[in-house]
Image (cartoon, rainbow, N blue to C red):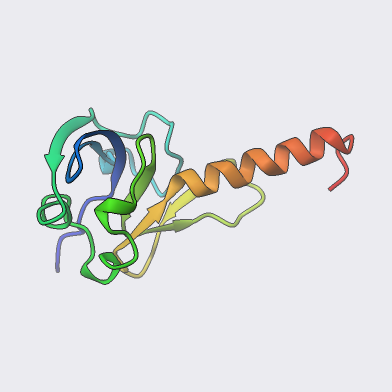
Length: 133
């Protein structure tokens, strides 16, 4: 049986030069039997810093080769957050957790920042309409 590859939360911390970026990455702590989670909970191990460039970022962070063209390093912005691994959006309305571990392995790079902005927009709309969607 093949061992599951870890899930990482990757934060684009700072552009040090045009093609040199410091990223912070934290591994999901699977010892807690985590299947539903979000990017801010305490299910993440301690963040570590790593400096990458356009030639090394995918390999150093074990990013899926299928996503390299969709997310070139040059398209990143400081503060962006991604999840990398066997994860997807949790579409359950009953859970406050935004993400889940997939049952079938499919390593991907998921932009968290987009999901957070969508949630904020939804909450703002509800506030303006008095709770009406």
